[in-house]
Image (tube, rainbow, N blue to C red):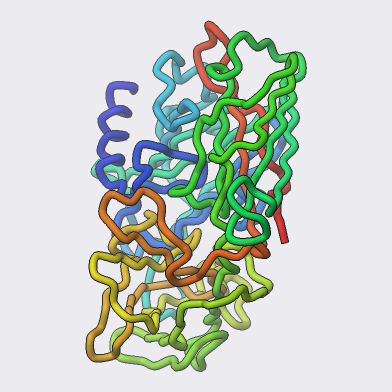
Length: 422
């Protein structure tokens, strides 16, 4: 089992294109085959909830995706427990972290699309189930294989055993500026009765803004400790660019354009949805949005999972070219993040950046992120979206614990509900 998992994990890492390719936080999808689309991880039916379930808490993680070949494939899935960085927990036997009938299960819940121009098969399964159940907290690598035993999807989710308390606060009075371009977090983790010898080595945190993995702060040691109370205060690493509110668009029918749409047209064999041209933002713009989320939808449908259609969606950004700059369309739905699928290219005749992406109809949040050099590790919001302290952001915080002599990393706290600032 372990001999097979490690090479496949390395294969997945080869597909990673994000600057933080070595890290794998819950919700991240480093590998998704070209024929698979619309991968979703939902907790108790809530597609916007962070993919972390409570150990023995009765919550269900639903995993679903579409196969656009429209041909049945005997897909199977496996789970591997991982450390806080997403590396397999080599000191654990599978039987210690997983209650399973066998180490690989078949995805037998699937249905064909109905009355769609793009035909597909919709697959789904839930965890835990009667044949597979995580036994300990931590990160889990979920790998889906095709019938040739090749990995076609890899993603991560978390299982939390809430043994520590977590309090987070956010301010726009930062160590860099005051009510300008940044937001700064402070954390307080109460380890309670959990023994601590070396907090910097035994406790690790992951902090994310709007589930962006390129800006994630990983493994930052606490700035102070008082018995079992750990604090991260006045820490410059926890200062985030504030960004701007996400843009949004909607397409619920192929008969007419929806929110932010210019036209919907049929060019055999696909529908094409052209969005109104976007432009760089020069000021903060408040809008009710969902920080990068997306929801599948189809007008009048009782089951959009199988009745929603796929449409070529054309994004346009009215901005002059910048030599060496790469511009990406970004959102939680854009996986793997910063892949060529979401890279915009400059059209000299139209004088704008363009990207055409095949999307399932519904509601989408998106933004434009930029890299100005190949060595840049973090995408910038400033060139297109701007950075404004008023922006409402979501911060996801995960706390991992591995005491001295323990054999695996536990997930002992996470921010629920997600912390926001407006």
